[in-house]
Length: 82
Image (cartoon, rainbow, N blue to C red; front, side, top):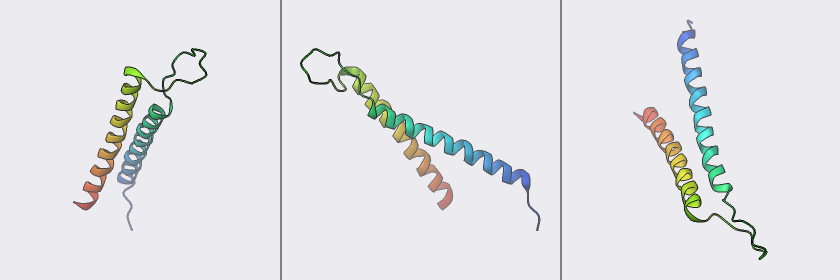
């Protein structure tokens, strides 16, 4: 039995980089949705939520991150099936 160590190392390196990138993208998407922009406290007792263009920008960024994750997973499934 002959093992091609260079090919094995290459597969390990690519899979490690891809995994870290996907986890990072997914984490950025979750953080963008979980940390809403707060309005200044007006003394009314009601905390502010994500408002205005900052909230929309964070939501769009989160959707972009999740979309890129979905595209990478779909491409991986395409490579396995084809």
